[in-house]
Image (tube, rainbow, N blue to C red; front, side):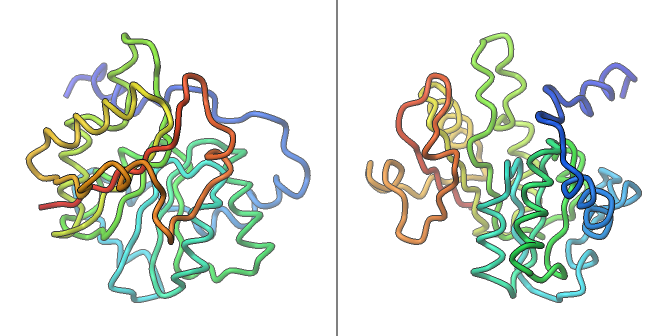
Length: 236
C-alpha cells in the first residue's frame, strides 16, 4: 500500500471539536477516557482483535456503535442491557465528553464499555471475524456534494468489513432523515451479497419500533432532512 493510500485510509474529514470544554469536561478526558479507550497497539487492522479480550464482563454479546454523537443512544443501551458489552467510536471531543458525563453522572458500570475517539474504520478492520452481534450507524454524515459521496461510511468496502465482523444473523442498523442518503444506504446494503433487508413493508422502515431509543438528533433534523428512516439489515 502506498503512503498516499495509507494516509487517505486514516484521514478523518471534519473538525474534532466544537465549543470550548469546561473544567469538568476536560477532567473527563483526562481521568475517565483513558480507562475506557482502546489502546493504539490493539488497532492492528489485521482482524485479530477479539472483543472478549477487551472486557472484564465476559458477555457473549457485543454491540458496536459507529459515530455515536453525544452518546445518548449508547448510554441507554447500556442501561437496558448491562449484561452486554459495548464498543463506541466517536471522533468528536464534545460528543465523547457528553457521553462520558452521562455515564458517570448516572453511575453506569464501566466494565462493559470501551470507546475509540477517532475514525472507526481502523477499529473495525482490527476486530476479529464473526465477533459482533449488532452494528449501529445512526445518522452518519450525508456528505451532500456528489464529489464527496466516496466519504460516506456506507459503501461496499466498509460493508465488506461489517459483514466480516458480524456474527451470522448479526444486525446492521442504520438511520437517516436525509432523502438522498436513505436511497444510497438502501442501495449499497441491498447490493451487498452478505446483507438482507428485513423490511416487509413501508412501516418497517418509516416507523420506529416500539423499543427504539430516540436521540436528540431525531427531533432536530439536518440540512435536506425529511422524516427519519430506520433500516434493519441482517447478515445472511
